[in-house]
Structures are given as structure tokens and as C-alpha cells.
Length: 176
Picture 1 (cartoon, helix red, strand yellow):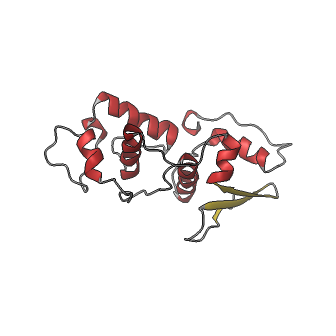
Picture 2 (cartoon, rainbow, N blue to C red):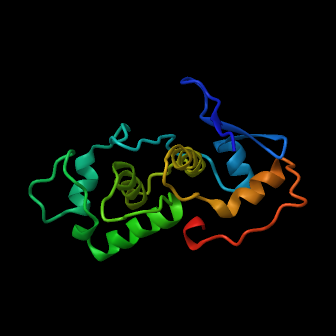
């Protein structure tokens, strides 16, 4: 697979690839159309640092996630085992359904904590954009799980990729 990022810094984030000779172009609007989901809300994706969004400060979510910790600060390690049961469940949904990553789940990323803040605060975020970024991130890592494997066929059909002769493979649990 020859996945390429085809957007410049001032354009909408997009991917391009060729599958069975058919060019595929995918951005958040196209993915939202394919999946019949909205593509509005915050357009943001960060992995290693805190997202910069008006009205958000890391201490907002840290004080919710770690209410008994008097030493919260934006650079602290974010550990799952210190979360309440409700917040652990929310984190579980994020790492297994919203932004599947595979691997260990003992630590929270800053983006995962930010999404928890969005969900708890009822702040909309552009989920298709997060999906596209998550696909790129998985593709660029040596050891990763294919995120959103269950929607690839929909993407291929949308782009009229010929799948005749392809052998179907049952998805592994971590690919769903």
C-alpha cells in the first residue's frame, strides 16, 4: 500500500493511495459521507502535546480525572489506574472504539484525555478527522494495529475499487 498525505499545512488534511490500480482520496468530509456521520466540531488532532483550543486548559480535565491529586499539572504522567471506574470506562471506549491503537492502555495520551474532556463537557469534535489521522499514525508506525479495518470495504466501494478475486479475511478482534 502506498499511503501518502496529500495536503499542505493550509489545506484540509487528506490521504491518497492506490488500491488495485484505483486511486483513493480520503479526507474527513469524504469519510463522513461514506459513514453517514457528521464532520463538524473541533478540527484538531495532537498526539504528543496538549491540543490548543480556546477555552481549554489541561488542568480542566486533569482536575476532573484526578480529583484527589493536589499536584496536578500539564506535564504529569497520565495513568489509567488512578481514574475512577466511570473514567476508566470512558478511556476504554476511546482506545478500543473511537481511536483504536493496539498495545498497552495503562497510560493516557494527551489527546485521549482531551477527548475525555470533550465528551464530559459535551464539546463536539470532528470524528472523521480523528479517524483519518489515526489511520496515518498507525501506518507510519512499525508495530501497529490496523484501525478501523471494518470500514475499509466501504471506503473501497465508495471509490469503486474492484475487489473481485480478493480473498476475504476475517478481522481480528483488534482490527475492529
